[in-house]
Image (cartoon, rainbow, N blue to C red; front, side):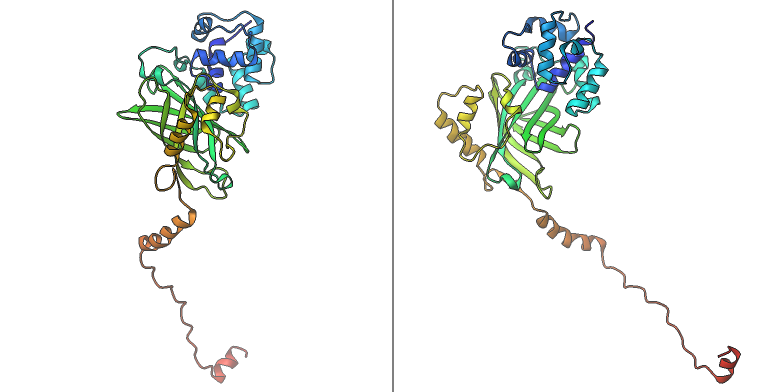
Length: 333
């Protein structure tokens, strides 16, 4: 008998970076173009007002999330069993998965005119690689923004397919005046990344600004900042989760965008504008600080903070007295 379908489906949407029901439907169609998953019914499933009864949907669901379990298990397991399977198979923190399944974290329903809803969707991100092993390369990632109810209702997730494995960061997106801020933390890790972006305007086709954090694939964790461009895609692309994030040198970003489903009328102009934005500024769009530069400051200011050190304490002097014959005889010498 199907159990906890609404919570398991919400958690699945978050795992896939599906910001809306349409995005989630696209994931089901990716594994089965003839899937029985329907957006109109999915809203009720996510709200717990109904649950799918067709076994074929659970079979597709098993392929979408790939937990190594059959569709019948996806249907009948409890939410806690689902959470444990996600932890064992995908390595996600159980508390985070429970949060994704919470009713207050339901995915957006595309409410017209709502600023959060207009931001919700999937974006492909382009920025400068921070790792010294990929110096001069552009790195590509996937950003999903989902609208939820309650305080802090914009949930953001960034994933990058690195040679060392997929890096996934999650956090809150906040509109503040003329800016959009996002602070994300790596799931199951210690990495933090901060974004300061221009406030988008409808139809929110592109986000852009700065990304700050520290290097990962690097002998030393260097503080780094890069310009970043995020362009909305019509639907999530499986390629962003399977292909290594570092683009080959001289790759046309416009051509890459079109291969992911974006519509671009003038690719040459798009490439010119994208390159000009990413490479702008004195540092060519990238700034990194070496540990040696930081150590130079430490060598100056640590001693100044500690102040003059007291002179080392001298050992007590040993006084020597002449030994008389009587003293030696008394001592048995």
